[in-house]
Image 1 (cartoon, rainbow, N blue to C red):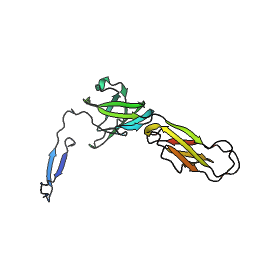
Image 2 (image 1 turned 135 degrees about the vertical axis):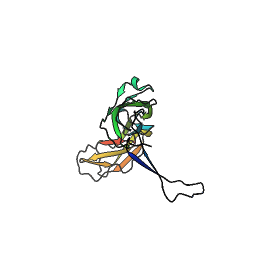
Image 3 (image 1 turned 120 degrees about the vertical axis):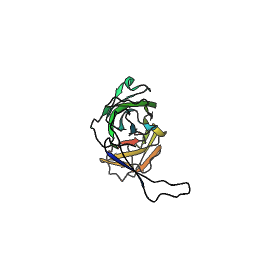
Image 4 (image 1 turned 30 degrees about the vertical axis):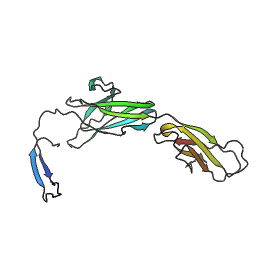
Length: 219
């Protein structure tokens, strides 16, 4: 339970036995919490990145939600707060709301394969986490477009464009798009490793049709 010091707190309790019989009325508990020294370290509540997520290689934003105003650090090794070499930028706005969340941000460098990060925080009273908040992120290889067609001079205006992809976060599975006359369109047949789409009828002329693809990790 979290209670503000020197203020009346009210807790309502209901119980139910194994047969399913429950109290019809709440049991009310009232108490006052005395102020005293803060000996509790901050709690890292959550992250914007899910554990074991697939990520593109390179820089990625990390955001942590903290239970109280703090300074936070991280490392690729599970070491003490004082030994962690990377600092996060944390909000310092204090609040009397016991359910308030405070945010810390930073940038992680994701390499291909498994990337392990450990986070610890210290509150304004000097209480530090004795255990790390661990986060594993999996860096995926680059997504590659291995082929596109057609190309060259064509003697018809009913044209199907095709593309093939490989690697990335899921063995080439991706969504592909093409741009025609400054209008970006998703392939009609995509979300796979082979992609195709029929183009609208084209007038005689020269066309450059860029193709781009992305997978579920953002490659």
